[in-house]
Length: 392
Image 1 (tube, rainbow, N blue to C red):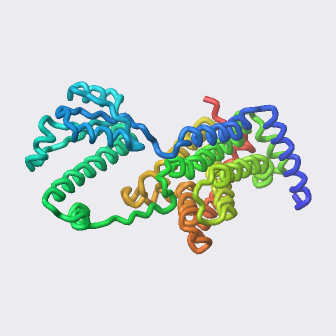
Image 2: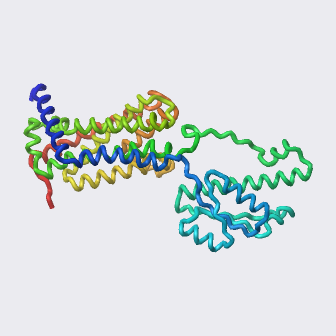
Image 3: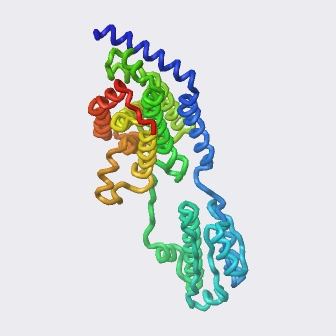
């Protein structure tokens, strides 16, 4: 085919694909509707940023002014909402049933032991089955216990006539100067949605790409597709995927605009550079989808493998558990996911504002995925030509 003939063929296939998309609403529902739903769902689910008013039990067996003051201060924190108990067994049962995230046990004679310098023991129990709730409850209880310990020490030192400056030097000999880079308020919305939403988009891209190519085999239209493309698999793929690429790219840009313009998520670098990262993510995800359906030209199997691959990307990206903390062979496997490289791009651009010097390697890694279709699409072309779709 001449170049002009290829252009006409691509145009005709593009119109054909748009017609298919109109006739089968699943394409729009599974891409546009699902992505928009997830954007609003996750951004509104975590709109408060950090979880607050977590139920924390206090078993006060002392019922003194000191123990009551501790309960009031714990309840006054942003994270905790105190639930008082008089029985240890009742608090343990409620924690096991998930009604509270943990509880503090204040022993009988707590205040008397403090006054007599007998170092009473304050115990706390945390349900870490619910990781976020348990971790935050543990942090809140530990902080309040440490503050209570400091308050008691200050009271004792004041009684001994020690001046305030020396008291603080004894209670806190080392001052902490904490800087939380990129997410100053510890906002879980920022922490999760910056990668969670692009990851969902990657999943949509891979699955829709596999489905659109696989249905040509399932419905027996692949021979007609190849004839319309002049028996060129490259022309066939271009004609079929151009509409989807435009939709996915627009969805990606909308996602970034919502995150960094509407929601005002921290962005130290340029949103234009994040557009580059999103475009590369979409292109590399499409390449992965083409590779999967080419190597396994059976729709149901290709969809299953694509789904497993997409879900694994969330675990191996590194935004929850650092990849460096994983086994060596897992660290190498993590490089096989476009979302991992998008995350590294995001860290360099959005958090550190490193610019091209910080993320050029990730651009190369994402471009490497574009090599997958030329290496595998001959198998898809062979399946299209012979219509050898397995129906059982």
